[in-house]
Length: 315
Image (tube, rainbow, N blue to C red; front, side):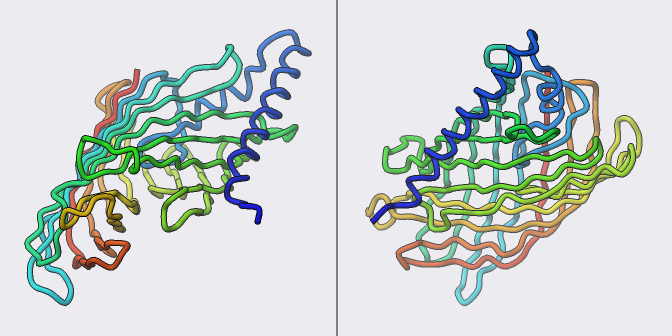
């Protein structure tokens, strides 16, 4: 029987080749690089935990990092507590392939620390190392429409000695449509081979009704922000963290451990200068659970408080 899942990536590759050929043909016909799609793309870039974000200025290098702390909380139906802390950093670089096609290369590391006093054996930490390559092309001949694809080879393990079995190749592709400078729609799909949930929709919009207010309702970090001044911004946000790691339990290697979490909070962002900005936020973490796929144990962590510090450097 034909495996339809294996057809997804080749189809996206064919779409990439066709769209790039179209871009190159249009550029050669005009006798000069087509600047409009490139300029608009620079305003719609990827950031850590945000699938798309509006940028008013063009930067080629960006470093994002955050630390999120959640104190120990009790768990359902058993004694003991579990505390979680996240640390994640990403470096990204934007460039133009052959001076025409906008691309972004990134390197990402993520760490989840686990403090556990329950009777379920859990690893002390979960580690992720990944790199990504993202490209944006005109969406066929539609005006103000683009196709964005990102491929993200990753290792998900409970140690820094990553095994080949912990390698995964998630990727997503989605269309971007901008009917005007204040409204952006996105629609597409994310694919996670070898995960329990293999396909997820990519759906959302960014609406900027005025120079102060922004609605960025996109995965994975939807938020609403209000600009108090050139340097100070207030925001409310939600988010989710869901993943699978290969860990060792009872000396059994390659056991799959899932972690799921939701959060809702608010905070303040301050722009120190053109290149550096930071934010501090707090809120509630809920829907948290650590679960072995093969029924070797599950821990449902009670809702609790979180605080987060985030820094962004752009040059």
